[in-house]
Picture 1: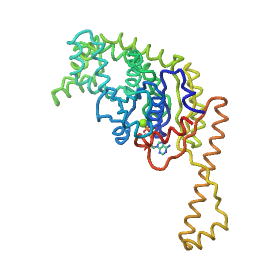
Picture 2: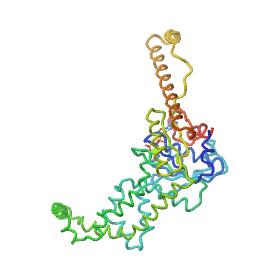
Picture 3: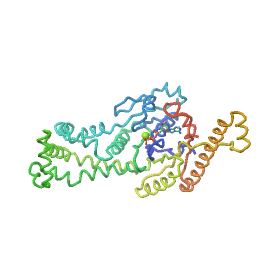
Picture 4: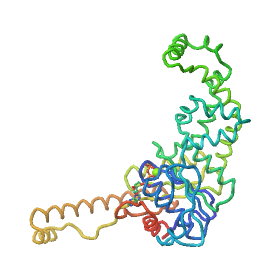
Length: 366
Ligand SMILES: Nc1ncnc2c1ncn2[C@@H]1O[C@H](COP(=O)(O)OP(=O)(O)OP(=O)(O)O)[C@@H](O)[C@H]1O
Ligand SMILES: [Mg+2]
């Protein structure tokens, strides 16, 4: 099965999965492969390894797509009629962009952006990075400049935690504390517990920061934009559930991946979201040689007792690990039923450049 068939007619591909399984590299490889096949593709990466970012020509910071140099693609054997664009999502910056877009006037915008509470909050609102990733996805999809968008997702405990982000933001906007602070100013002080009130005034004396005043003015400005946020969150959710979108689970051949795939399957079904298939990454290839006693004595003769023994033991480990992977993949296949699965082997060395992505594509686009 080729990933090309799997994402045919799709406009958005979301690569989700547990931490460290290869979401970022898989996203980049799929994007490069589709560009090679003539599409205009943008990949939205999250915190890529520096070397991969360098090889895509991405700067350290910046929430703008950059086109990957066609000559570099060509040199890596990824040349074709299309275009590959890449960007790194930098959560805080996008949050600022969003405030910029929704603020009713420049005054409100500056009030929010310069507010110390906002600076803290834009970092701290749980999952703001997740949310912003989808925000950007929505924005680019609206633009219509690309045939395909590939979204990398942030490492979360659960492969689909990030899906809760828009709802979490909406909940935050509706939360009582927000309403309270919007209404409240100094008068609100009396409504706070006595301990809290004392805390605020001690903090003000000690630090010179008028936390309560900051909170009140922040939430007042923020509140005026909340309708815009909520509306966007709704449209982001619509895009995720659209038939032009598909979710790929990137996973390892570990035993845990089987229950993870089951979870992914159920969760997407519950949320009515489209599950495209699974990429099992870093599969250890089957070793044909078996560590027989004949081989062991041959190795001992060739390399001496100690080294020969180590090599034989190493081979035994390789065989066991490869067998274990094969067994888990069998179980995973059962779990998935007719859902497509693509296996990518453990490649020699890290995948950190365009040539590495091309090597991965030999399997993704097999
Ligand atoms: N098939 C492969 N063979 C060898 N190395 C690989 C393969 N796939 C990924 N890697 C390497 O594994 C490491 C983790 O990959 P990657 O950064 O894509 O994972 P991730 O799921 O995005 O991680 P995180 O959850 O931290 O964002 C990288 O160093 C990458 O080069
Ligand atoms: Mg990653």
